[in-house]
Length: 432
Image 1 (tube, rainbow, N blue to C red):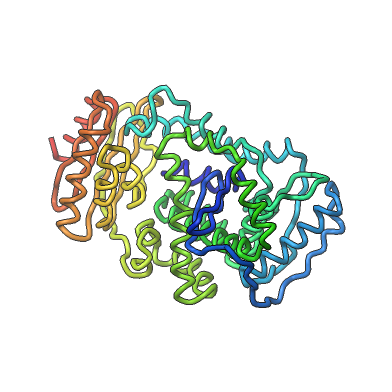
Image 2 (image 1 turned 90 degrees about the vertical axis):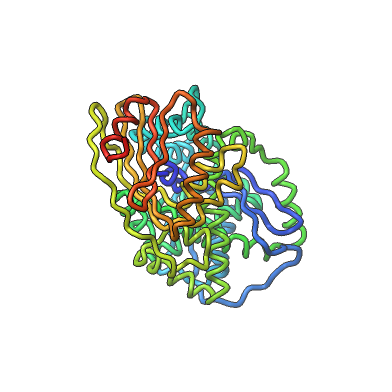
Protein backbone atom coordinates (compact mmCIF):
# COMPACT_ATOMS: atom_id res chain seq x y z
CA UNK A 1 0.00 0.00 0.00
CA UNK A 2 1.85 2.94 -1.42
CA UNK A 3 1.24 5.74 1.06
CA UNK A 4 1.89 3.53 4.07
CA UNK A 5 5.22 2.49 2.58
CA UNK A 6 6.23 6.14 2.53
CA UNK A 7 4.99 7.23 5.94
CA UNK A 8 6.25 4.18 7.79
CA UNK A 9 9.72 4.79 6.37
CA UNK A 10 9.71 8.47 7.33
CA UNK A 11 10.72 8.14 10.94
CA UNK A 12 11.22 5.73 13.79
CA UNK A 13 9.36 6.67 16.94
CA UNK A 14 9.97 5.59 20.50
CA UNK A 15 6.24 5.70 21.11
CA UNK A 16 5.94 2.35 22.86
CA UNK A 17 8.13 -0.53 23.94
CA UNK A 18 7.30 -3.64 25.91
CA UNK A 19 9.02 -6.83 26.93
CA UNK A 20 7.45 -10.25 27.15
CA UNK A 21 8.30 -13.40 29.04
CA UNK A 22 9.14 -15.10 25.74
CA UNK A 23 11.53 -12.47 24.41
CA UNK A 24 12.43 -8.86 23.84
CA UNK A 25 9.89 -6.56 22.25
CA UNK A 26 11.04 -3.35 20.65
CA UNK A 27 8.92 -0.62 19.20
CA UNK A 28 9.64 1.35 16.05
CA UNK A 29 7.27 3.78 14.41
CA UNK A 30 4.86 3.15 17.26
CA UNK A 31 4.78 -0.58 16.49
CA UNK A 32 5.83 -3.30 18.91
CA UNK A 33 7.91 -6.19 17.57
CA UNK A 34 9.00 -9.24 19.52
CA UNK A 35 12.15 -11.29 19.08
CA UNK A 36 12.39 -14.96 19.98
CA UNK A 37 15.50 -14.46 22.11
CA UNK A 38 15.14 -13.98 25.86
CA UNK A 39 17.14 -11.01 27.11
CA UNK A 40 17.41 -12.18 30.69
CA UNK A 41 21.18 -11.95 30.94
CA UNK A 42 23.83 -9.59 29.67
CA UNK A 43 25.38 -10.74 26.40
CA UNK A 44 28.93 -9.90 25.35
CA UNK A 45 29.53 -9.18 21.69
CA UNK A 46 32.63 -10.12 19.68
CA UNK A 47 35.07 -7.24 19.12
CA UNK A 48 34.64 -5.22 15.94
CA UNK A 49 36.97 -2.61 14.49
CA UNK A 50 34.97 0.59 14.76
CA UNK A 51 35.23 4.19 13.62
CA UNK A 52 35.98 6.31 16.67
CA UNK A 53 33.28 8.96 17.15
CA UNK A 54 34.13 12.56 17.91
CA UNK A 55 31.18 14.84 18.65
CA UNK A 56 33.23 17.56 20.30
CA UNK A 57 32.06 20.03 17.65
CA UNK A 58 28.36 19.28 18.08
CA UNK A 59 26.59 22.05 19.98
CA UNK A 60 23.20 22.18 21.68
CA UNK A 61 23.70 19.07 23.81
CA UNK A 62 25.13 18.49 27.26
CA UNK A 63 28.34 16.59 27.92
CA UNK A 64 26.21 13.69 29.20
CA UNK A 65 24.20 13.51 25.97
CA UNK A 66 27.37 13.86 23.87
CA UNK A 67 28.96 10.93 25.72
CA UNK A 68 25.81 8.85 25.25
CA UNK A 69 25.70 9.57 21.51
CA UNK A 70 29.35 8.66 21.10
CA UNK A 71 28.69 5.39 22.93
CA UNK A 72 25.64 4.71 20.76
CA UNK A 73 27.80 5.20 17.64
CA UNK A 74 30.29 2.64 19.00
CA UNK A 75 27.51 0.25 20.04
CA UNK A 76 25.76 0.39 16.65
CA UNK A 77 28.97 -0.63 14.90
CA UNK A 78 29.59 -3.35 17.47
CA UNK A 79 26.17 -5.02 17.30
CA UNK A 80 25.96 -4.71 13.50
CA UNK A 81 29.52 -5.90 12.89
CA UNK A 82 30.31 -3.01 10.53
CA UNK A 83 32.37 0.17 10.90
CA UNK A 84 31.16 3.53 9.67
CA UNK A 85 32.86 4.41 6.39
CA UNK A 86 32.76 8.05 7.48
CA UNK A 87 31.68 9.51 10.81
CA UNK A 88 27.87 9.80 11.06
CA UNK A 89 26.46 13.31 10.81
CA UNK A 90 24.63 14.29 14.01
CA UNK A 91 22.26 17.24 13.65
CA UNK A 92 20.87 18.78 16.83
CA UNK A 93 17.52 20.57 16.65
CA UNK A 94 14.96 21.78 19.17
CA UNK A 95 12.12 19.49 20.23
CA UNK A 96 9.69 21.50 18.10
CA UNK A 97 12.03 21.44 15.10
CA UNK A 98 12.38 17.68 15.46
CA UNK A 99 8.61 17.24 15.43
CA UNK A 100 8.35 19.60 12.46
CA UNK A 101 10.90 17.58 10.49
CA UNK A 102 9.05 14.35 11.20
CA UNK A 103 5.74 15.83 10.11
CA UNK A 104 7.35 17.43 7.05
CA UNK A 105 8.31 13.99 5.78
CA UNK A 106 4.64 13.01 5.89
CA UNK A 107 3.30 16.28 4.54
CA UNK A 108 5.52 15.87 1.44
CA UNK A 109 3.31 12.93 0.50
CA UNK A 110 -0.06 14.55 1.18
CA UNK A 111 -0.87 14.80 -2.52
CA UNK A 112 -1.40 11.04 -2.46
CA UNK A 113 -3.62 11.08 0.64
CA UNK A 114 -7.00 11.76 -1.07
CA UNK A 115 -6.66 8.95 -3.64
CA UNK A 116 -5.45 6.42 -1.08
CA UNK A 117 -8.06 7.46 1.47
CA UNK A 118 -10.76 6.93 -1.15
CA UNK A 119 -9.30 3.52 -2.00
CA UNK A 120 -9.21 2.36 1.62
CA UNK A 121 -12.76 3.57 2.21
CA UNK A 122 -13.97 1.93 -0.97
CA UNK A 123 -12.51 -1.39 0.20
CA UNK A 124 -14.06 -1.01 3.64
CA UNK A 125 -10.66 -0.80 5.36
CA UNK A 126 -11.28 2.75 6.57
CA UNK A 127 -14.49 4.17 8.04
CA UNK A 128 -16.36 6.64 5.81
CA UNK A 129 -16.06 9.43 8.38
CA UNK A 130 -12.33 8.87 9.00
CA UNK A 131 -9.74 11.52 8.17
CA UNK A 132 -6.82 9.42 6.96
CA UNK A 133 -4.32 12.27 6.85
CA UNK A 134 -5.09 13.24 10.44
CA UNK A 135 -4.80 9.65 11.62
CA UNK A 136 -1.34 9.37 10.08
CA UNK A 137 -0.23 12.75 11.44
CA UNK A 138 -1.44 11.76 14.90
CA UNK A 139 0.50 8.49 14.74
CA UNK A 140 3.73 10.25 13.84
CA UNK A 141 3.14 13.38 15.88
CA UNK A 142 4.39 11.96 19.16
CA UNK A 143 7.80 12.85 20.55
CA UNK A 144 10.67 10.92 19.01
CA UNK A 145 14.14 10.33 20.39
CA UNK A 146 15.68 10.96 16.97
CA UNK A 147 15.61 9.63 13.44
CA UNK A 148 17.75 8.90 10.40
CA UNK A 149 17.09 11.16 7.42
CA UNK A 150 17.97 9.12 4.34
CA UNK A 151 17.83 12.17 2.09
CA UNK A 152 20.57 14.00 3.96
CA UNK A 153 22.35 11.16 5.77
CA UNK A 154 21.80 12.86 9.14
CA UNK A 155 20.91 11.43 12.51
CA UNK A 156 18.56 14.11 13.81
CA UNK A 157 18.34 14.37 17.61
CA UNK A 158 16.71 16.89 19.95
CA UNK A 159 18.74 19.43 21.88
CA UNK A 160 18.63 18.44 25.53
CA UNK A 161 20.48 18.66 28.80
CA UNK A 162 19.19 15.43 30.34
CA UNK A 163 20.49 12.12 29.09
CA UNK A 164 18.52 9.65 26.97
CA UNK A 165 16.52 6.92 28.68
CA UNK A 166 17.23 3.26 27.94
CA UNK A 167 14.35 3.03 25.46
CA UNK A 168 15.45 6.22 23.73
CA UNK A 169 18.98 4.85 23.46
CA UNK A 170 17.59 1.66 21.93
CA UNK A 171 15.74 3.74 19.35
CA UNK A 172 18.89 5.71 18.55
CA UNK A 173 20.87 2.48 18.11
CA UNK A 174 18.21 1.42 15.59
CA UNK A 175 18.48 4.73 13.72
CA UNK A 176 22.28 4.69 13.87
CA UNK A 177 22.25 1.24 12.24
CA UNK A 178 20.18 2.74 9.41
CA UNK A 179 22.87 5.38 8.89
CA UNK A 180 25.57 2.71 9.03
CA UNK A 181 23.98 0.28 6.57
CA UNK A 182 23.00 3.08 4.19
CA UNK A 183 26.66 4.10 4.01
CA UNK A 184 27.63 0.56 3.04
CA UNK A 185 24.69 -0.53 0.86
CA UNK A 186 23.01 2.70 -0.33
CA UNK A 187 19.58 1.36 0.52
CA UNK A 188 17.85 4.74 0.59
CA UNK A 189 18.24 5.60 -3.12
CA UNK A 190 17.33 2.03 -4.08
CA UNK A 191 14.19 2.18 -1.95
CA UNK A 192 13.21 5.61 -3.25
CA UNK A 193 13.62 4.38 -6.82
CA UNK A 194 11.23 1.51 -6.12
CA UNK A 195 8.65 3.98 -4.83
CA UNK A 196 9.17 6.38 -7.74
CA UNK A 197 8.70 3.53 -10.21
CA UNK A 198 5.60 2.25 -8.35
CA UNK A 199 7.31 -1.09 -7.62
CA UNK A 200 5.40 -1.18 -4.38
CA UNK A 201 5.54 -4.84 -3.40
CA UNK A 202 9.28 -4.82 -4.00
CA UNK A 203 9.49 -1.73 -1.81
CA UNK A 204 7.52 -3.54 0.89
CA UNK A 205 10.06 -6.38 0.86
CA UNK A 206 13.04 -4.03 0.80
CA UNK A 207 11.68 -1.96 3.67
CA UNK A 208 11.23 -5.17 5.67
CA UNK A 209 14.92 -5.94 5.12
CA UNK A 210 15.96 -2.41 6.15
CA UNK A 211 13.82 -2.30 9.29
CA UNK A 212 14.32 -5.96 10.17
CA UNK A 213 18.09 -5.43 10.01
CA UNK A 214 18.04 -2.42 12.34
CA UNK A 215 15.54 -4.12 14.67
CA UNK A 216 17.70 -7.24 14.97
CA UNK A 217 20.71 -5.08 15.81
CA UNK A 218 18.60 -3.22 18.36
CA UNK A 219 17.51 -6.50 19.94
CA UNK A 220 21.14 -7.60 20.18
CA UNK A 221 21.96 -4.27 21.85
CA UNK A 222 19.14 -4.78 24.36
CA UNK A 223 20.65 -8.16 25.23
CA UNK A 224 23.83 -6.39 26.33
CA UNK A 225 22.01 -4.36 28.99
CA UNK A 226 22.73 -4.91 32.63
CA UNK A 227 19.96 -6.23 34.85
CA UNK A 228 19.41 -2.72 36.22
CA UNK A 229 19.15 -1.21 32.73
CA UNK A 230 16.85 -3.98 31.58
CA UNK A 231 14.63 -3.28 34.57
CA UNK A 232 14.50 0.40 33.58
CA UNK A 233 13.70 -0.64 30.02
CA UNK A 234 10.76 -2.75 31.18
CA UNK A 235 9.49 -0.12 33.63
CA UNK A 236 9.61 2.62 31.04
CA UNK A 237 7.85 0.48 28.48
CA UNK A 238 4.91 -0.05 30.83
CA UNK A 239 4.37 3.71 31.13
CA UNK A 240 4.13 4.44 27.41
CA UNK A 241 0.76 5.37 25.97
CA UNK A 242 -0.08 3.39 22.81
CA UNK A 243 -3.69 4.56 22.62
CA UNK A 244 -3.18 6.42 19.34
CA UNK A 245 -1.90 3.30 17.62
CA UNK A 246 -4.50 1.09 19.29
CA UNK A 247 -7.28 3.38 18.04
CA UNK A 248 -6.03 3.43 14.45
CA UNK A 249 -7.65 1.21 11.78
CA UNK A 250 -6.65 -2.43 11.86
CA UNK A 251 -5.21 -2.41 8.35
CA UNK A 252 -3.00 0.55 9.26
CA UNK A 253 -1.66 -1.17 12.36
CA UNK A 254 -0.85 -4.28 10.34
CA UNK A 255 0.80 -2.29 7.56
CA UNK A 256 3.03 -0.42 10.01
CA UNK A 257 3.89 -3.58 11.93
CA UNK A 258 4.95 -5.64 8.90
CA UNK A 259 8.46 -4.27 8.20
CA UNK A 260 9.46 -4.48 11.87
CA UNK A 261 7.85 -7.72 13.00
CA UNK A 262 7.84 -9.87 9.85
CA UNK A 263 10.98 -8.07 8.70
CA UNK A 264 12.75 -9.04 11.92
CA UNK A 265 11.82 -12.72 11.45
CA UNK A 266 13.00 -12.52 7.82
CA UNK A 267 16.39 -11.04 8.77
CA UNK A 268 16.81 -13.50 11.64
CA UNK A 269 16.31 -16.34 9.15
CA UNK A 270 18.89 -14.88 6.75
CA UNK A 271 21.31 -14.26 9.61
CA UNK A 272 20.93 -17.85 10.80
CA UNK A 273 22.00 -19.05 7.36
CA UNK A 274 25.15 -16.98 7.03
CA UNK A 275 25.53 -14.32 9.72
CA UNK A 276 25.65 -10.60 9.02
CA UNK A 277 27.39 -11.25 5.69
CA UNK A 278 24.24 -12.95 4.40
CA UNK A 279 22.19 -9.95 5.57
CA UNK A 280 24.64 -7.61 3.84
CA UNK A 281 24.30 -9.58 0.59
CA UNK A 282 20.50 -9.35 0.76
CA UNK A 283 20.60 -5.60 0.05
CA UNK A 284 21.71 -6.25 -3.52
CA UNK A 285 20.00 -9.63 -3.92
CA UNK A 286 16.50 -8.30 -3.15
CA UNK A 287 16.98 -5.62 -5.81
CA UNK A 288 18.18 -8.09 -8.43
CA UNK A 289 15.60 -10.85 -7.85
CA UNK A 290 13.24 -8.85 -7.73
CA UNK A 291 11.99 -9.13 -4.17
CA UNK A 292 8.42 -9.57 -3.02
CA UNK A 293 6.51 -9.48 0.26
CA UNK A 294 5.93 -13.21 -0.26
CA UNK A 295 9.66 -13.86 0.23
CA UNK A 296 9.62 -11.91 3.49
CA UNK A 297 6.52 -13.65 4.82
CA UNK A 298 7.97 -17.06 3.93
CA UNK A 299 11.78 -16.79 4.17
CA UNK A 300 12.21 -20.21 2.57
CA UNK A 301 10.84 -18.58 -0.63
CA UNK A 302 13.67 -16.01 -0.60
CA UNK A 303 15.74 -16.24 -3.83
CA UNK A 304 13.60 -19.18 -4.91
CA UNK A 305 9.89 -18.41 -5.41
CA UNK A 306 10.06 -15.34 -7.63
CA UNK A 307 6.97 -13.33 -8.68
CA UNK A 308 5.54 -13.95 -12.13
CA UNK A 309 4.82 -11.05 -14.47
CA UNK A 310 1.05 -10.60 -14.78
CA UNK A 311 -0.38 -8.64 -17.70
CA UNK A 312 -3.35 -6.38 -17.06
CA UNK A 313 -5.66 -4.90 -19.71
CA UNK A 314 -5.58 -1.16 -20.31
CA UNK A 315 -8.96 0.30 -19.39
CA UNK A 316 -10.09 3.89 -19.83
CA UNK A 317 -12.51 4.90 -17.08
CA UNK A 318 -14.27 8.13 -18.14
CA UNK A 319 -13.91 10.91 -15.57
CA UNK A 320 -11.24 9.00 -13.63
CA UNK A 321 -7.45 9.29 -13.59
CA UNK A 322 -5.30 6.18 -13.51
CA UNK A 323 -3.59 6.85 -10.20
CA UNK A 324 -1.11 3.98 -10.37
CA UNK A 325 -0.37 0.55 -11.79
CA UNK A 326 1.59 -1.68 -9.45
CA UNK A 327 1.65 -4.98 -7.56
CA UNK A 328 -0.71 -5.56 -4.61
CA UNK A 329 1.41 -8.45 -3.31
CA UNK A 330 0.83 -11.24 -0.84
CA UNK A 331 1.00 -8.82 2.08
CA UNK A 332 -1.58 -6.56 0.43
CA UNK A 333 -3.98 -9.48 0.09
CA UNK A 334 -3.32 -10.61 3.65
CA UNK A 335 -4.09 -7.17 5.06
CA UNK A 336 -7.23 -6.80 2.95
CA UNK A 337 -8.55 -10.27 3.74
CA UNK A 338 -7.69 -9.96 7.44
CA UNK A 339 -10.66 -7.67 8.12
CA UNK A 340 -13.63 -10.05 8.06
CA UNK A 341 -15.03 -12.43 10.65
CA UNK A 342 -13.01 -15.34 9.26
CA UNK A 343 -9.91 -13.18 8.99
CA UNK A 344 -7.17 -15.68 9.83
CA UNK A 345 -8.59 -18.37 7.55
CA UNK A 346 -9.13 -15.91 4.70
CA UNK A 347 -5.66 -14.36 5.02
CA UNK A 348 -4.03 -17.78 4.65
CA UNK A 349 -5.56 -17.99 1.19
CA UNK A 350 -2.93 -15.47 0.08
CA UNK A 351 -0.15 -18.01 0.74
CA UNK A 352 -0.21 -19.30 -2.83
CA UNK A 353 0.43 -15.88 -4.37
CA UNK A 354 2.30 -16.14 -7.65
CA UNK A 355 2.02 -12.58 -8.91
CA UNK A 356 -0.44 -9.80 -9.66
CA UNK A 357 -0.85 -6.39 -11.24
CA UNK A 358 -3.43 -3.79 -10.30
CA UNK A 359 -4.85 -0.51 -11.58
CA UNK A 360 -6.08 2.17 -9.18
CA UNK A 361 -8.37 4.96 -10.46
CA UNK A 362 -9.54 8.16 -8.75
CA UNK A 363 -11.91 10.92 -9.86
CA UNK A 364 -11.19 13.36 -7.03
CA UNK A 365 -13.77 11.74 -4.76
CA UNK A 366 -14.40 8.12 -5.71
CA UNK A 367 -12.07 5.16 -6.18
CA UNK A 368 -12.00 2.11 -8.39
CA UNK A 369 -9.52 -0.71 -8.77
CA UNK A 370 -8.85 -3.92 -10.69
CA UNK A 371 -6.41 -6.63 -9.63
CA UNK A 372 -5.38 -9.45 -11.95
CA UNK A 373 -3.99 -12.31 -9.88
CA UNK A 374 -2.17 -15.55 -10.65
CA UNK A 375 -1.47 -18.25 -8.08
CA UNK A 376 1.35 -20.75 -7.88
CA UNK A 377 -1.18 -23.49 -8.69
CA UNK A 378 -4.80 -23.79 -9.79
CA UNK A 379 -5.65 -24.73 -6.20
CA UNK A 380 -4.13 -21.47 -4.98
CA UNK A 381 -6.33 -19.52 -7.42
CA UNK A 382 -9.39 -21.41 -6.15
CA UNK A 383 -8.51 -20.64 -2.53
CA UNK A 384 -8.04 -16.93 -3.13
CA UNK A 385 -11.25 -16.78 -5.16
CA UNK A 386 -13.15 -18.30 -2.24
CA UNK A 387 -11.51 -15.89 0.21
CA UNK A 388 -12.24 -12.82 -1.93
CA UNK A 389 -15.88 -13.84 -2.32
CA UNK A 390 -16.11 -14.25 1.46
CA UNK A 391 -14.46 -10.84 1.94
CA UNK A 392 -16.95 -9.20 -0.42
CA UNK A 393 -19.85 -10.82 1.39
CA UNK A 394 -18.58 -10.15 4.91
CA UNK A 395 -16.47 -6.99 5.04
CA UNK A 396 -17.10 -5.08 1.82
CA UNK A 397 -19.49 -2.07 1.96
CA UNK A 398 -22.93 -3.17 0.74
CA UNK A 399 -23.54 -0.15 -1.48
CA UNK A 400 -20.22 -0.56 -3.32
CA UNK A 401 -19.50 -2.73 -6.35
CA UNK A 402 -17.22 -5.77 -6.25
CA UNK A 403 -16.80 -8.74 -8.56
CA UNK A 404 -14.56 -11.80 -8.50
CA UNK A 405 -14.17 -13.55 -11.86
CA UNK A 406 -11.97 -16.08 -13.65
CA UNK A 407 -10.62 -15.37 -17.11
CA UNK A 408 -7.91 -17.32 -18.91
CA UNK A 409 -6.53 -18.88 -15.74
CA UNK A 410 -6.27 -15.52 -13.96
CA UNK A 411 -8.44 -14.14 -11.19
CA UNK A 412 -9.96 -10.67 -11.61
CA UNK A 413 -11.01 -8.61 -8.60
CA UNK A 414 -12.81 -5.40 -9.57
CA UNK A 415 -14.16 -2.90 -7.04
CA UNK A 416 -15.66 0.58 -7.05
CA UNK A 417 -17.75 2.75 -4.76
CA UNK A 418 -19.81 3.72 -7.82
CA UNK A 419 -21.50 0.50 -9.05
CA UNK A 420 -21.88 1.76 -12.63
CA UNK A 421 -18.12 2.34 -12.84
CA UNK A 422 -17.36 -1.14 -11.56
CA UNK A 423 -19.74 -2.67 -14.09
CA UNK A 424 -18.13 -0.64 -16.88
CA UNK A 425 -14.63 -1.87 -15.94
CA UNK A 426 -15.84 -5.45 -15.78
CA UNK A 427 -17.46 -5.14 -19.20
CA UNK A 428 -14.38 -3.48 -20.71
CA UNK A 429 -12.19 -6.49 -19.89
CA UNK A 430 -14.71 -8.94 -21.32
CA UNK A 431 -16.33 -10.14 -18.11
CA UNK A 432 -19.70 -8.47 -18.53
